[in-house]
Length: 178
Image (cartoon, rainbow, N blue to C red; front, side):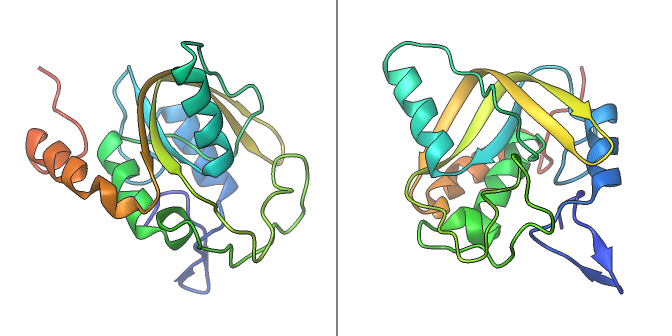
């Protein structure tokens, strides 16, 4: 269960983000999936079709990519984001549809509409680092410098990559500090 998932009446509310948990993860550099410390250096996130296409085009043209528009999705460990891309129904399949609409749509959440399709070619993307801002109502992230781009139509394409990542890290998301 993602660390940023809110609970209501003892039940996790998947597809929603808990403001306090997300703010804690941002401030303390905790993975938004497993809630453990992310060491300095690259972080990962899963992106949908539109951002995946923009990143792919920038990389193919030899240009840098930086998401200048902030996002509500926080970063995580590589293994955690590979895993999330496979187990979240919306992230895993191109024909998946959102099950919820944002409670109070604004410029950051206007795209969160019940029935919206993820679209083709999502990706797990590694970034050199991230910036964040905690406002009175949102936690916003921007990601800097693409270091890895792993596109997928169906996220099971990442299964071998996840297995290798877990094996390299002794079954955990990150390597222990030397």
